Image (cartoon, rainbow, N blue to C red; front, side, top):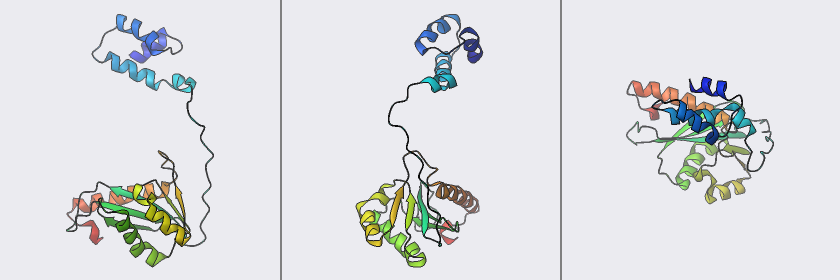
Length: 197
């Protein structure tokens, strides 16, 4: 009703303060202020003409196609899992090979340090798959720590971090996380422990 009223009465959106007074005087409903604010905040025309603040976005960077398995990997952390085994793991490190789309899920504890995570990664990924040339990840503090940075400088691996609120950069890992969560939901529904699978 609010949308129809405003579109009928005002052919182009105005500032909230200019529209609010006549609307509040003419009509009453229990959620009128909330509805009015939602309309103003979601009005497509208003959003298009708003002044943009801040720097312009840069161009997307092309990710080089890997030539060998595990040469380029995507990594992400899943936390907040329900502890599902006697070790009480409540988080998982997802590692996905960009070429083969092979995924490894490494359970760990949310409170583990950067060193614990590095040892987990070394023992389960580097020791079996080799050293990757490029690792794409979000800006997880455990991964951006000084330890990891120094380790990968010594190994000659390039760390590529996604920008804030841009999950498309690490989309491969994000998609695999969805798949893993679906699988875990099915296992947990039958009382199985995800560490064993």
